[in-house]
Amino acid sequence: MPDDLMRIEVAGENALIVYMGDTLSPCVADRVRFLDQQLRKRLADQLVDTVPSYASVLVIYRPDRIRMEALQEHIEEFGRATSEPMAKEDGLLVTLPVWYGPEAGPDLMAFAETNGLSPDEVVQRHHAREYRVYAIGFAPGFAYLGEVDEAIARPRLATPRQHVPTGSVGIADRQTAVYPAESPGGWNLIGRCPVRIFDPQAAAPMPMGVGDRIQFEPISRSEYLKLGGMP
Amino acid sequence: MSGFRVLKPGVLSLFQDAGRLGHHALGLTTGGPMDGEAFYWANRLTGNAEGVTALEVAQGGLRLESTGATSVAVAGAVMPLKINGQTKALWRSHRVTAGDVLELGHATAGLRAYVAASGGFNAPVHFGSTAVVQREGLGALLHVGQEIVCGTPADLDWALPMEQIPRYEAPVTLRVVEGYQAAEFSAEALRMFYGSAFQVSPRSDRMGYRLEGNPVLAPAGERLSEGIAYGAVQVPPDGQPIVLLNDRPTIGGYPKLGTVLSLDCWKLAQCMPGATVYFEVIALETAQTLVEEAMRARDATALKRGA
Image (tube, rainbow over all chains, first blue to last red; front, side, top):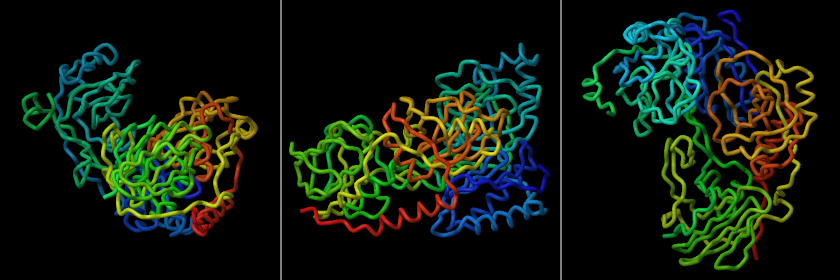
């Protein structure tokens, strides 16, 4: 699909899904973020909700307030604007501190055998680049970030863990994520982040949204604890 | 002040309102009543506005003691309702006073009943909704001894006209609006999908109904995860379709061939494991008209005096 094209499909009696591309890329993520923001800003009263994801936005609307044909016209208009320069503005940059190391990240040692990298090399490559929030889902506040350096890509564990501690930082293939709460999970754990990624009580429950940028910053164990990380 | 004390929480009794809307971007699902029709009538019969918090009782086994005078109604699955040991009708309001014991036995047809009380149940609000979603840790199951406070009580005597009461009988035909990746499914796969009988799997829950039958060949290839609409029919590689319902994940990567009409999702949610279901294609415009007409018709329905 060319960069500036989009495709709209029916997703139900009161839902449309808008595809802004079919690959994972920062450019597609920008356009997804822009379209989603336009929809939320300009059609707030007509929509039930939207789900921005890697390359698409699901739009659920209120049939008593707008017809599907009219919504489609709005989407086409916003979609055309995604190729304009204003749509390419960078998302928010959020810095997340991470305590890396075998104690915080029990899978760090395993990269030596599969990827031929020492724990230090894995850590260095993990925080060397900036990531995009490509999607949020699986659990409340679980943000899929990409893409990691190919050298540290590693498939999910054959047997997922029953309990992954809150704040664990993991890698699955070319994606990375911070577990917002304790849950089962199969990602390769390499560290822990003391920042609360999902706080249901807060006015803004998450520090980032789809399309925003994330930079990890290595910290020591004592800094991790000082920042409120759970021991 | 009216309210209830929980004597027995039942198999799975959850507070539900219209659902948690507008928070998909955080990964939060909607929750809400699995059978929107029965939920609507339970509230109407107790004089409540649409979407007021009621109790969704799956399978039955609930026992409540009233702590004040008000009106209650139970609508949905056929569950024996007793107040102080006396059998009472579903789909109509009943007056209760402090000390009265309301008891729901086990469902004999359908799966979920809605208990509404005038003024609604005061349940904890998370992200603007009382809908309990266990998977997300939002809200909690009922426990023995729990005191539930209700809103403004009322003294009502309403019943839904007999001919309006839905019947929960299998087989159920689910009408599907095609969409998403429908065009990627082969003609043979679609023939299998629309031409076969499927059985409701025991592994069905509020997240989705899993169906077992002749495998429907799903298009190959990996897909980027995308938003999942209420009623979306996803077909994983094993070819056994899953209809995603109220507690569905917000995103997923399996191919989807369309979305079940909301009115039929409600019927599906009343199906017990083993029930037979069929799929039938429906044009988008027809689906939209049917839903509009159904909403208009129910709003126009006049309740009758209970007598």
